Image 1 (spheres, rainbow, N blue to C red):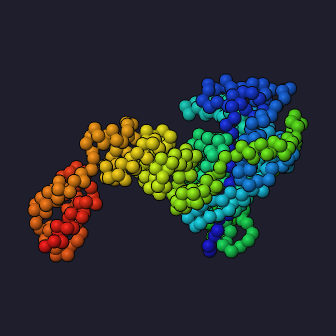
Image 2: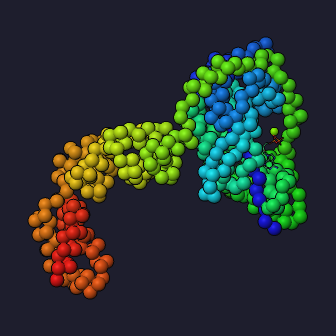
Image 3: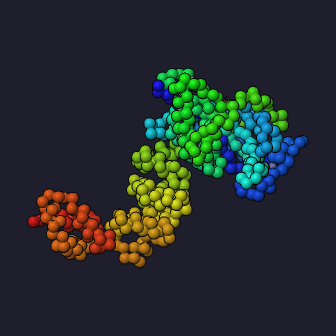
Length: 477
Ligand code: ADP
Ligand code: ZN
Ligand code: MG
């Protein structure tokens, strides 16, 4: 039997406000344990939460960027559960009236574009962190993170493959980074994902019973966990067994999921409106202000890169991957207005160097000015592509200016015809057998000759001239 996966993601995004959502404690990461705490985020009796306006604005930005409808009145609710990292005994979340509902995100997959609907986006406060001592049966609790603002983005079960789930998550990361509302870093926990997955026989409308997967802290883990779960569930279904609705933990070292607990139901949490917080009212003026503050978003930027610069979709997709990269491209094109050429050099050469070190483009010593100068030097015939690549690498590491390096290291291209033809003639004299082969019809030895000339000129010969000269001399007999 052929099964189809049905997947819905619940994504938590840590908002990078300076202070927490209901108190003025700092949200700074990495401080000594329990130093960024106060009676409010420690859940002391008698305290009152005060909502951080910035957190609401960040959440509104995400809602608008994902085509959601914002509820002009929305309400915080208490979601009760006990855990040592939750001192209040309840999380402040939103339940019946969340901040926003009914949006969507478009994602690119190998099978083409897909629209994933968003059920809701709500705000909540983060819990603290438990640190388990490996050597002793002791656990510590650090409440610095308690009260950090989160949004939860709940998708409809519209995702069909692990690859699509990963694209959707990456798109969320891209959007929150464009909006500058979160670091969006899965490894560090500022972007977290729970994945719900069920299977159904292909062609059937009705959903199967789902399992909820947790504990995946990279895009790869999400994909791996879902792939494992598809194998596990299909084996059970083929055996005629039932899927149990439960929460499962991903074990990254083994690549498998384990049952953690039965799934709790909403009524288990005893949700009720938080009496300490008044409903949030969002008037048109505020909404318009937030709308006006939105930057150009990834989809718009990608489309503009195609229409304004005549770039292929693929180039536009890569170059708009981050705001920094897109700004870099646009700055370079201003100085050297041949977009496709600039795009090729960024995508093929520069990104290769940067990815090797896992850096971002803003940290490279190859500034847009450097790249534009390098491309002009190629265009003028001063240097070859090959030399330009070497210079690019050198500048990426040590900095410097292309024309100075060309001057200092004597890298100017040899375009002097008499000088080049002397070398070409010598190469042909030295390799009579290859010349014979060429003349007998093996045109591929051309590459060999070009290589020899390049070697003798240490890569500085003008390749076009070398080719012309070789062809002239070889075809002459
Ligand atoms: P619950 O009440 O169990 O929390 P929800 O309906 O609130 O379930 O959905 C939680 C998440 O699970 C959503 O992202 C939703 O898209 C996804 N989901 C719901 N039903 C299924 C299903 N049958 N298979 C896979 N995912 C599902
Ligand atoms: Zn506090
Ligand atoms: Mg639910």
